[in-house]
Image (tube, rainbow, N blue to C red; front, side, top):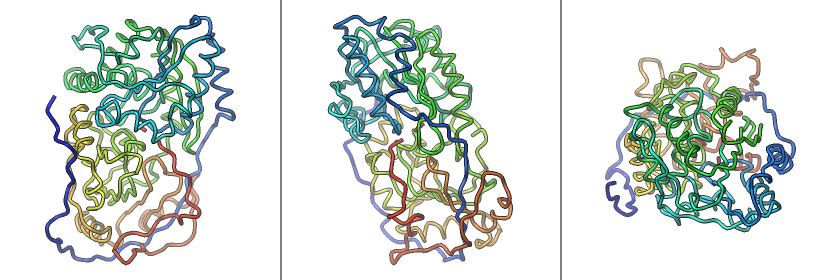
Length: 450
């Protein structure tokens, strides 16, 4: 592994680049109404699922149980983990959390604990110790010759409980994605395992690597069960399911299909310019979900629309400067670039074998300049007639803004509601876009993936 230098700030261009001002399209706010099944009582559901599979019957008093805690923001992750801890302790076990997030958190034990704290996961909030280390043990080798690794602390426990959100992956399309198998193959395998799996993808493909390495870890480790989480488009938990090891792969496929159906997507296709207010690891593994914007490194983007230009404005606070995925964009602000933690971003990009995802786009000091530049590179259509969409993030698509050129195709479409009349793009004195939603009415911020 290459030695990555300590955090080095990026700097703005030495001189301002002149970009001709262009007329802007007017924007209309729309709301998508979606199917959003929800778990009414998360702790009760977790407890019921663990009782259904009789978790207490396979754990003896005094045995240690490692519970995985990953780097994806999951809306109900704290009550889920707290309830798993409580049920195991009632069975006489000694539960603890292990950080299971590959190379995230700057690939340091301390950094990974800090990531968990961002999501409210602390020893006090879950009622159990949190243990973090970056060293692993090799538990086996796949038939393709890929080594399978497991976090040393988890491997030393009497049992492992795999807690994973199930959803489509940002790198490839298939019947599985982010879920149990990825947590087993990459999350629990820390930096070395994440890098190994991502390198193996070039020869064997992502799905085959996840299945093969995941199966090896399942066969060679003391996995007690999994807790599968599917979220809805309303930022809630749709399904919680406890899964025994021998059914983990098949149940992931079923839950993945449900998660894909529940995902919100952009209602417009094609798009000349997509404005994304914020990207970050809590939103998606690549900062923005490629199931929404396309540009998958190992897939065709599935149902994602054709997008000519993407402009990203800011990093989320929860991403701690990790800007992996910024390379998917065509334009950015210089303030986003200055917020990048170079080391954390590059470590993650190298472990993912995806250095392109860390490439810095053309960037400008103000939103206005970036939008002028972007609209000047979309083709012959007059900028005021461009097909523009603005979203807060790829995680939050219930309310968004579309330009008038897109509005005609949305009228009367089921599940879409037009909110108000067309409005001019509004900029502050510094040339930056004003917030889409006034602070007093903005939805709560939840740390969330891919």
